[in-house]
Image (tube, rainbow, N blue to C red; front, top):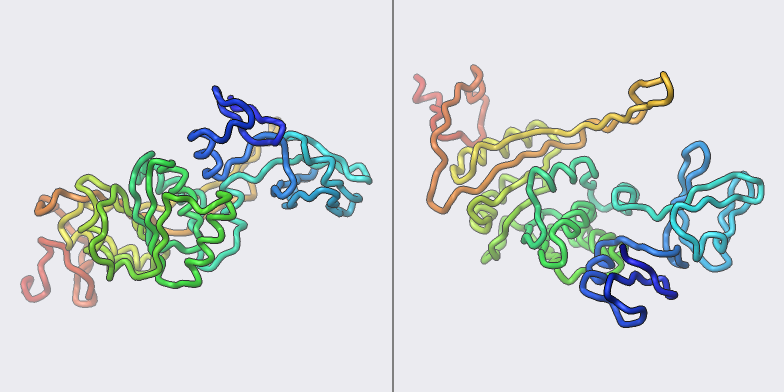
Length: 328
């Protein structure tokens, strides 16, 4: 386990205090993880005895005021995470540095964020691995970008496209604020991915945008054979359009769609029941894999529901599905 020197910096095994950060230490710093004693300038979360949480940026001589009296920042600075401090009025507060999922749900937003439950699904079902090159569009507020950067590690790379410059600025600020510096393995580009030319090869791609079907051809040209594409959409209309576009393209496996719901539980003695906090629908996730160049997926034996591709359907038509004229 890493130790901390007298400056509060992390010192890994084999490193002497004051000898400068090792490669592993630099990777930890760019992960947004802070270890060792709490320091001035850091943000901490104070949780009271009813579970209510307050976010505080520590400052030498600072004071956090509560209904139960003041809490001195100096009582926290220099101490470990997980300590308990008391206000003047006797209220106890548990102090921890906020972790990634707590940061992303409270960070300033330009566009809506990808919530932690969906980000976890993307990382696992998308098989994002250390050293991978990941293409992301759009960057939004930078929430998913943070998780992707941590997953690919210092040896990987994330290339993010964002159409709106104001959203790109928000994403950049949020990522830099959380990680503590601009990560050298992140390339944030303001522009339309659908119009991008000469994209470098990528291992994984995530499309979090209103019309991901507009970028399918572009992604197909950059995604390595066997690479995974994930599309994150909010509505059933978008869900149907992107799945049929992927089928009609022919260069991807049959897409799979899912959504993630999370329900908390209360367990205390014999009182075991669902909790009050439930996170339901936030978006749909579509996953598919890229086939080898020039290869088309074997025609799937499908029996669409009556009317699925009837006269009111005007979207892309998968191979093997006859038009109305052909049916007649």
